[in-house]
Image 1 (cartoon, rainbow over the protein chains, first blue to last red):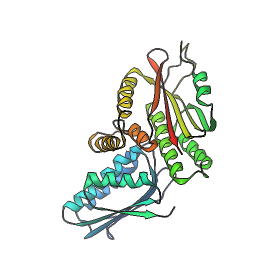
Image 2 (cartoon, rainbow over the protein chains, first blue to last red):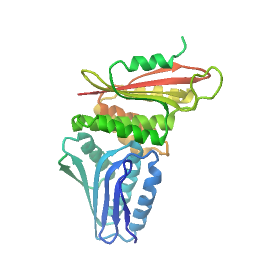
Image 3 (cartoon, chains in turn purple, brown):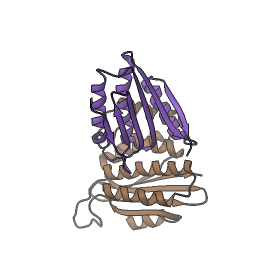
Image 4 (spheres, rainbow over the protein chains, first blue to last red):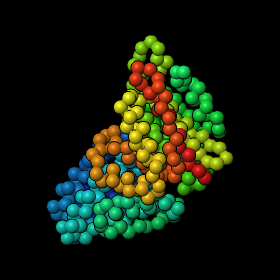
Amino acid sequence: MEPISIAGTPKTPTVHFDAEKGKVEIKGRSIPENSIEFYKPLVDWLEQYLSTPAAMTEVNIQLEYFNTSSSKCILDVFKKLEAIYKSGNEVVINWYYEEDDEDMLEAGEDYQSIIRIPFKMIETDE
Amino acid sequence: MAFEFDEWLSVKSKDEVLFLFNGEVNSTLIADSLDKIEDQLEAVKSKIRKKIYNVLVECMQNLFHHSETLPAKPGFETTGKYAACILSKNSVGYHITTGNFINHKQKEFLSKHLSHINTLDRDALKELYKEILNNQEFSDKGGGGLGMVDISRKSGSKLDYSFHEYKDNFYFFSLSINILE
């Protein structure tokens, strides 16, 4: 599978998806007006990855901001990862939040309670 | 008395105004405005700065997706997707105010949704947020009022809103959000 590599912009995150290494990374800010357009190729990629995932998939989500239009798309990403996890593969989700950013920590906890894969909450310096 | 946009704007701009725009909202304007606001807030404590920025993004995208287009016809002072957004500051904290024109159906939805949101405490807002996020269909325009729930959660204060009858079944929707320091 071809990896995905997208550079971040002021409104969209940096993305690295690599099937061979089992890496899924989304970093930066996600505040586009049309999130579905941005996330659809990512969700489609994961759908394909689902059939032959790596033995372990490491997921790193490190967002500074995201809007509610992205929040649903991010949930769609997690739902694909949940399917990989449920089919018996290892999935590790690292949810990064900056020190003092309780809102971002809480956002991670919200996702965790919906998708039922254990999250590792990782605090970073500002 | 008929709704007066200029009067509304002057009342809402009483405190120290850090940012103000009024005009037609488009995607470029949102990007430019957010850039300006980020510069303005550089010195603000990160926790508060992020809250302000998050709420502003949500508010401006609401204006972009949900403002009604006013017809160009006699009697209408403005046309198009006319809207306003003000970020101001006073001794207790920051205030974000938005105003835009909506139709009767939008007014019905908002009035029900916002009055419900204002009855909820922190935990209940969290539950409502998760319920909408997980169960409702989303479109490019958003989904099921999730943005307003998020605004209320992040700001930690009640939404202060009003509807003003304008013309031809159009209403002016005014929303103010406090982010206390």
